[in-house]
Amino acid sequence: MDIRKMEKAAITALEDIKARDIVVLKVAHLSPLFERIIIASADSTRQVKALADNVREKMKERGYPVLSVEGEDSGEWVLVDLGAIVVHVMQPTIRQYYNLEELWDQPEPKRPRARKQAAQTQSAAG
Image (cartoon, rainbow, N blue to C red; front, side):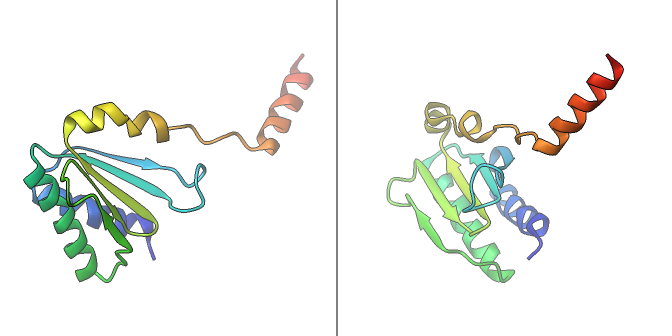
């Protein structure tokens, strides 16, 4: 499975129904459960549901797994679990309140080897 193609397909499904403020976060270094989080905004509960439904249908058409869909009853925040990618479709007030971008947008930690090489370079220069 090519994660980039899967990501592009999910984004296209969101764009088809006019999702706003689409953000993709690479989170493989933070969670072993999934590699990407896609967050998008919608203007109404109806649009939230339509976006989530379109993502589910388009991904199934392309042969990608749809493990679950949560939150369709309220329509304020719907999560579509695609395995390697989790798509969150939210109304702006809910998105602002939970601020998933800040929660999940953490830099990837430096590898120990890179730190060791940097320390050797600094000591040789000093």
